[in-house]
Image 1 (cartoon, rainbow, N blue to C red):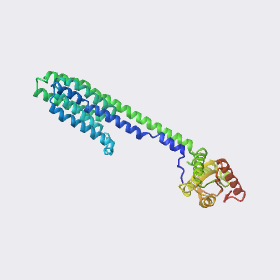
Image 2: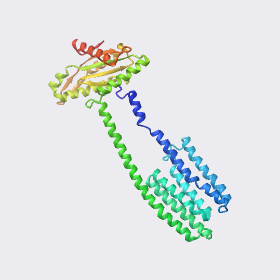
Image 3: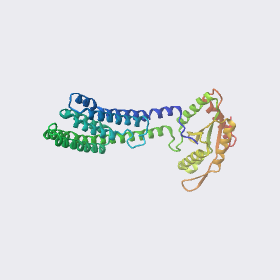
Image 4: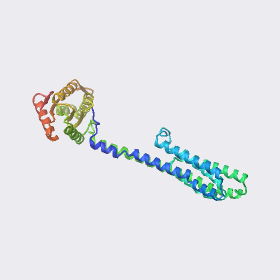
Length: 375
């Protein structure tokens, strides 16, 4: 038996509250764009340096296409989804690591203009702070210092005229002053992201509890009166479009006041909960059940005319009559129910349909109870 079938309103709420697909796609595009800037941003600088004789054209013609190929592979991974099965589907960390390595190559080839590369390093690390967890940023920090330390020491040893050791030491010192603090900032940002994620999760759980309270009967867990009425209106609208039949049943637990008087409210509550359980187990998946008030329940019997709905209702009546509810003191309570059925008529408003089912229920109770009467 379906007590979870959402109405049209619920579908809209679910769509509005789950925009993760577009947001994730937009985030991936932003990450790829930033990584592209970091990877290929040095190409114009390298071309300019080669044009004025400060960098070899051969190195530029090898290095620049290689950077573009890496960009295309990253974009293809997102476009065709082959990277989505990986832990980092946008390949953000590998792209930034490649970007830092590429800027180091650019640094080695630019000679006197090499200082212009260092802001690109800062750009890559800053982007990593906002896109990656703190542990990954620390790894990228060590990668940056290691790569640039190796390049600077190698070039100052190999070409000391173009890369004076003192200048390289100053450049490396600037990296030491700028890059490690960014790793500390990344840890703080990661902590803030985790806190925001926890708060978001707590808010979503609170919202779910509020929605549950607003839609569910606290004792039985069934739809409450407001929600089952919303479901009835939704079924009615669908029936008006498709001319599909449906029926409703008003159900009353017989002699419930006597049960409360003899066994106390705890016994009455046990009866209500047990009836709700057996009804959900007996009804079909397409049917919907809600507590209308007190010991009365409303069932929406989808895709059934009165004859078909009577069969379903009789099955439930027999299941309840065979039921024994255990009292809090260990005794047993036997149950019966009375039901009034009404099939929907084209153009009939929901309140009129419920009124006809209620009148049929009154006749069932007047006729001796433990029976199903249809309008």
